[in-house]
Image 1 (cartoon, rainbow, N blue to C red):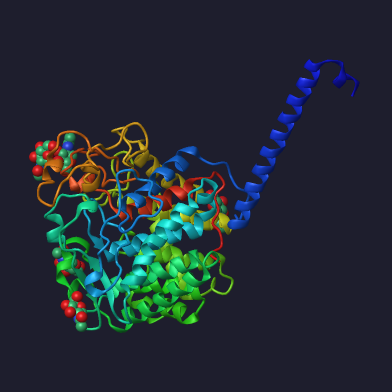
Image 2: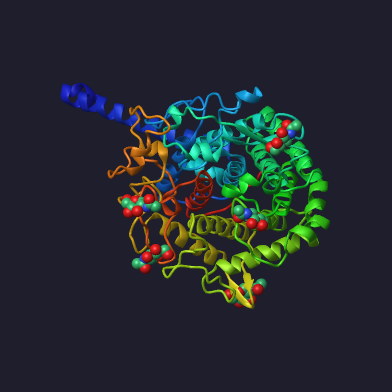
Length: 523
Ligand SMILES: *[C@@H]1O[C@H](CO)[C@@H](O)[C@H](O)[C@H]1NC(C)=O
Ligand SMILES: *[C@@H]1O[C@H](CO)[C@@H](O)[C@H](O)[C@H]1NC(C)=O
Ligand SMILES: *[C@@H]1O[C@H](CO)[C@@H](O)[C@H](O)[C@H]1NC(C)=O
Ligand SMILES: *[C@@H]1O[C@H](CO)[C@@H](O)[C@H](O)[C@H]1NC(C)=O
Ligand SMILES: *[C@@H]1O[C@H](CO)[C@@H](O)[C@H](O)[C@H]1NC(C)=O
């Protein structure tokens, strides 16, 4: 007190001290409040671990590719070179199919991989939403998911009719233009009772069932709408069986489905999680499981084959479901999931030999990165199921492995993608110092202010300079088996990103964000 009155200088310092103290209190209060708020929004099962900056940064980059791919009237658009496009999509059937996402470097909307993207994104949010939230990526993830499910709802125009494609690949690929400037015809393709598409209808059901869980708390009405569509579509898919590749042979050129049994099991598994309805559990463990599940044989998880994903998803019930843990059918799925995991661990007796010299899982020349990224996502999921349930051992032909072995494998694949590879380049566009400059992507290759139509845009494909726009977040196809990469705009085999790749890399990165991983409950 006395000191305060002694001199102005001291009084001045006192004021400064008080102001500083107030600022500190305010900051601490905000931090506590923020932490508290995020805890409420999505309860984490364990103590939040430290954030691994590399994966958090990469996730923020990867998430943006969904914004790059958005069709329709954009909301809160953050990609400077993107604008509204395809506003008339669906109008020939009096439907609004303007939303959804373009498939890759082109402007097709292919329903089969688009629905798969939504299912994988839902899965990532359901398991790792709290980790996404810790780095402010939960909302963008939910918004992007909804951008697809809004489209899928409209595409399921009536019972037993699902629009599965907007645009004709021949016409679309005959143009090199920006989506904002498209003038070419964009015809619609549907599956129905006379031309069934069990694979695409069931994948769409899986997308909607999983998304219904994502929105259950935040938007119950939207969530029940999704679930209603999912149940109808599943019943359409199951009752009117046939591959869309047989009903509509033209689809074989791009997204040929090699069978629909996997999608039926995948969709029923998601519907069981979304409804708890025993009939879906019986569906996957009974006769359909015997016919379609290929128990005991490991497979690669992809937009075409969902068996490995189904095995991991159903294993979840054996780890955490009190009622289900002893179900013998589910044990078959669990055993097969174990076989998948044993195939991935590099030094396991049953390790796959499909790898590059420096350890990248490598299965196909086209879009090579889809398989390592998808496999790594499943590996962290399985590892986290083991950790969260305190399951210590994974047995592979008599050898014992730990959850950490799976996580190490998953990280090695993610790290390869992000630059730990012989080329020392990142395959995730916009991440790191060195990434592809000639991504095969129409919108990225044409300056936003160019006036270019369908045919006269080809000069931008041939242009020698790098893309004028960064297709931020694009995960390109990736390296050859010999670990080389040709950064050329016409190299669609290696240099074309796809929207479903983004679903997978977002899943993988969100699983690696914190150092003390765990999965959360779906509901
Ligand atoms: C059913 O779908 C097929 C394949 O897309 C299409 O050719 C046919 O016109 C559709 N049927 C009806 C009644 O619209
Ligand atoms: C599509 O898949 C089916 C079933 O696996 C196969 O018989 C057919 O040859 C494939 N079509 C193309 C064009 O690859
Ligand atoms: C787990 O593996 C360790 C060796 O890594 C072994 O000592 C232990 O017996 C195994 N436990 C079970 C339950 O298999
Ligand atoms: C790497 O593989 C690709 C595709 O098989 C081939 O075209 C290329 O010549 C190979 N490069 C080297 C350096 O071996
Ligand atoms: C692709 O472009 C490269 C040069 O950027 C050229 O050497 C090559 O011949 C082109 N390939 C095709 C298939 O057009």
